[in-house]
Amino acid sequence: MGAAKRPACFSKDSPIFGIMKRGFGATVVTFLDISLLPNVDGDGLGFHQTFCAYTNADYNNGRGISFVVTPEVAASISSETFGLGVGGLDGQVGSEMGMWEVKETKEMGQGLFAREDVAAIFAGESLIIKTPVLFVAKQLLDTPSTSRRQLVLQKAVEQLPEKTRTAVEKLAESRDGGVKDMILTNGITVKWPWADEVPELLAVTPEVARINHACRPNALWRFNDYTLGFEVFALKDIKPGEEITLSYGFESRSHRRRVKSIEANLGFTCRCPLCSANETLIEQSNDRLSEIKALKSVLPSDQKDSPQLLGLLPNLIKNLEEEDLHTEIPMYEEILAYTWSSFGIEVRAKYWAGRARRHWAVIAGKESWETKRCADLENDVKAHASWMSWDGEDPWEGVGQGHPWDEREGDDHDHDHDHSH
Ligand SMILES: C[S@@+](CC[C@H](N)C(=O)[O-])C[C@H]1O[C@@H](n2cnc3c(N)ncnc32)[C@H](O)[C@@H]1O
Image (cartoon, rainbow, N blue to C red; front, side, top):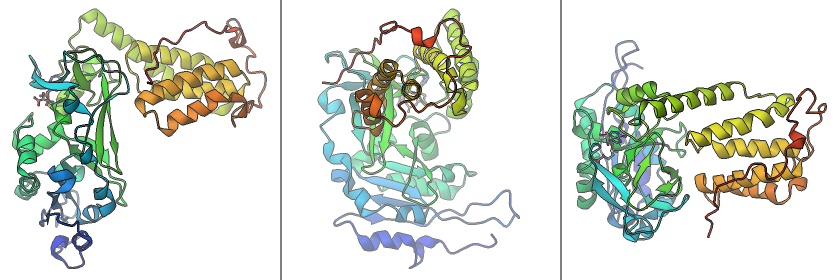
């Protein structure tokens, strides 16, 4: 790429000026030029990239928000995006509702706990909806450390309103300290679909950052890239006093690999209930994880082999349930529903569509199109495009004993409770 380019932030043509021109009423917008990153694989001359610390201190009723991104990405932060912030929802969920509290744990620093005096929290219920206060381009953190990078990250924190800045400065660090460490320890990767290259950003939300990791968590998160609302919701029913946990990743690896990956990538030794369980339980879990991997590896991708799914998928779902790995289950249930529908077996299609609908309602939300799509199939299997779409041979040819047509209704009950109220 050759010699240094003049940092784009200061150029009149810079897209960041677009933001300033569009304006945000009384909003304070601060920016600064940053970072010349040497290109280690290139011709040695290095290329230069510009990152801006872009802060809107008024955002979300004074909660504030900072971005450390390229000027192009900063320019994609539109007034529409900012106009839709969920900060006005303060008070609707979370601590204000008395659902959870931050407490000191024995081995993991602070953690978030369901309050003792609340009734149970049900699967699918929201625990936190907050806007992140800091977004940082992952690309910037992946580069060798420079003082300029440190400077831009610090600036992004300093520019936040005092209350928010104090909350950020109190967040945990896991290695050498410093802002980069704080971001890697507490940031969650989200995609930013508003810029052409769809960059990955680490989003730091102080309330969410108090949630510890568990390899079998009881909560999940989702990020709404329209409202910038970062939501944590219950994946399972959570009892009063129970710790609320999220998975930071690596949950489908076997115990040893999981512990090593977490140490190498996240800088701590996992002390979650599964990783601290006795040897027998860990072995059982490892066996199930191998079985899950083996089943996934033989799942047919060709439609002509879809009869095989009818045997493989219920087995896979059963293993995932027993292993407490819930997020993939509705997808497999939904595939089973379409497969049964394609063979014209209404009752089975309805059964699996119903299960998929209930599980999608927790994982993707009651109003999600996944939930609605399954409800459509469940409500009128025969009107669905998949109905009787199988045009191959008798699918049960050679299946032998345990013919799927013989499967009696009611053989396997769905124990999941539908908490829709
Ligand atoms: C995002 S913070 C979670 C909140 C943190 N415990 C605090 O005091 O603010 C992540 C840090 O918490 C600790 N942590 C989280 N989950 C853990 C686990 N399963 N085992 C051990 N330490 C954990 C690690 O120090 C990790 O770097």
